[in-house]
Length: 604
Image (cartoon, rainbow, N blue to C red; front, top):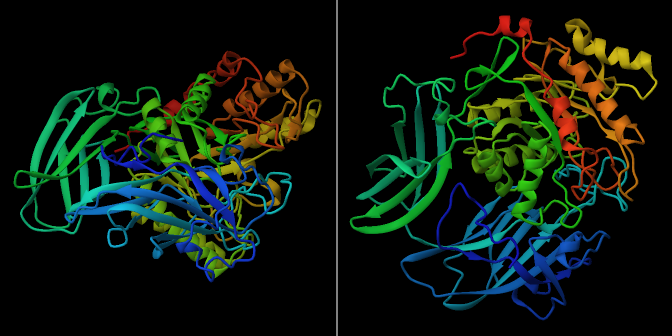
């Protein structure tokens, strides 16, 4: 069995059936499977594939790199069907469009390559053996499909990586009561010391009760019962119970930060009389992220973000991590180097990564794959995807920023085109309307519209020996007027008609120093050829950043080498290029300056 951990740790049930492992598989290059009835067959599937790894990856058992736009999966599963139960079939992620057949019946068609979905298959299943078939379409030349960093060519070049097609996160089955807990949204109110728990019920009926228990470190703190008198119930719990210890610096054991990732456990039980209908486990962190007066605040305290760009690729699994241990290792290595978070680049990461970011204390900027060209279909797809992203990941305390657009990808004319500017604004307000607790960036890098952070990409830091360009990099970061008039990649910081409104500045991409430490060859934005040269260049860049009184954080490119890019702090297989403690010592030079301290103000 591959990837055995429960796939949604923030909405966990004890009883579930993991459907990962060996499936039957075939390509459908002529696109004849639907007409020929493959959804009801099993002998047509001549290959085997290890789910949840895509056919392009080594861990799939196939490692086929040429393009196949339509693929099919098949396996069987067994259940003992009960009349008082429903059966939910879950998919962590399928890239891009998935048609799900159970016993020959089409039960769902889902578009969206990075988001989870569940299918109620109760009417399609029978007791005993059931046939499950999945058809996936992923048209590589369709520029309305969000692609992110996936290459449309073979072999991949420049900043593009091996594409992925098909199931790439866990598939699982759950047996639930007809009336069960469907969704859960947890909103901490840090200032008041309260938490709001919103519970959505499926197939609501009267006379139900919901029992809840909140605990920390196995000590039960709060228990209660409410009458479920409607399909959506809200519970407000006063965690501090009017104690005077309200803020993180008075009572750090209550709050979530990267340094102290304290979490509350939550258990919900849906009961009908004496019968337990459903039981769900979750957790949350008391965490607040905000910005004011040009500064970012975590739990009302100024907080400098030291992020690293993380593409979320692995040599053998591509977009799919080989194990939970791989997630843990990446976070621990980054923290050991002195980073307090990451920007997940052009990828909505597996919830298991977010779980470990929550547990280990690691800030996350969550981004999704961009589409290549602006069309109405593409815009609609991205809007729908962001509804699904926020719906799935709302409860994770580690996520502090949503990043819907990057470097004008998909909106190439946003600098002057009012339609594309409206789209950026629409995404910003859409996400804000779904989640008012986090920061949102309109278009990371340049040509920004409405935004909570002014984020700038700058790789023009000069090569070794280019003293004039190195000085220009430092001057640009140190002077407000120069920073606002900087043209990253020939683009203005703000789109036409939009201006800086006092948002905090963050240098959200820079660096990319290539250093070949393994047999892997490739490129970077600048290059060095020894460990000491690498450390010298890295320290120079960080000193320039830390000397700026304007910046409120940075994101270094990047955590690991990826395929033809060798500009990581680690190799592609996560081996050290330079001693961790040397990078950590450089990263930890930062402290709040006198000017920044004098600018601090209470944020409530």
